[in-house]
Length: 354
Ligand code: KG4
Ligand code: ZN
Image 1: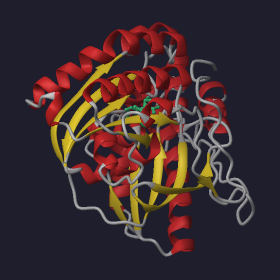
Image 2: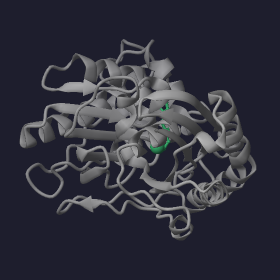
Image 3: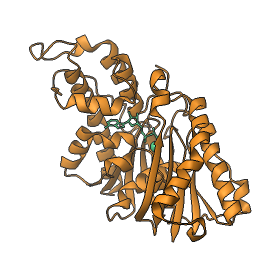
Image 4: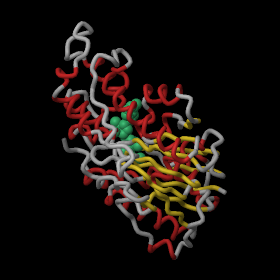
């Protein structure tokens, strides 16, 4: 089964051809970073316009690289939720056009299911598993009962962790996206130089699996002097120390909440995905703990891509005939089940603000 995947939920235009959910015949990502850089965050209007310019060429390139003709494709998969609504609409409109003109079925895909499937592109993964999605738009704890059946149990109640990386980098004038820059800087830094706050929220109540990163962000940006623990280590403007200490605080919380969900559910497999899962410090910390088995996608499959969309679509039973496909809608928020008091992610689209 050969699936063409299309991903346009945020600021990367992706197209990929994947066979049987595992064999990646092509995976093309057209990055818009340079258009958003001077705003230090994703500008939704620019994102949708750039998707419009590049989606067709990205799809053609993916088909060409895979050496696959449209008639050889069995289905088209497209991200239809959650994400920036204008960006999603460009992807689903393109996908509908291909489905209709090539008479191919269309499979709608939840972007988060794609992220959690990403480790499965290159390794054997079995379900159910716990999913931790850490990206610019999301920080979520999920029980993935199967690849397409997700139950959201926790979320950030303010900033997503990737967003905090980007805003810290913006504040220190380090460019966009901030994650990779802080990742590199932190390698030279002392993670014990600053005791930035760890925000666990209250345990055993509605925030058991929820996150909050805005306090850590504020401490790192505005109050770092107060948290300087080792004055002898360096000046309070030593960016590598700030970066390393920030990461230590953020990852401590991510690890603790994930371990709590593992303990509560007895599910000992954990997939960590999303752009921040490319972070070298996070990968090392999750890799060295021994309370659960960790699946980490290759870094290129952590950030947004269409291979994960085409891959997970092979497990979907929601296959729309090309005529029914024309009625497919996009949703800016998740429409999957959300357990009890889990707080829904904040609306996407506010990432450029501080
Ligand atoms: O999954 P993604 O490509 O797009 C969203 O769905 O948001 O994630 C992008 C986010 C950005 O905030 C970026 O700064 C962060 O992932 N990121 C990283 C790293 N690479 C990307 N954060 C920390 N360390 C990295 N190496
Ligand atoms: Zn994403």
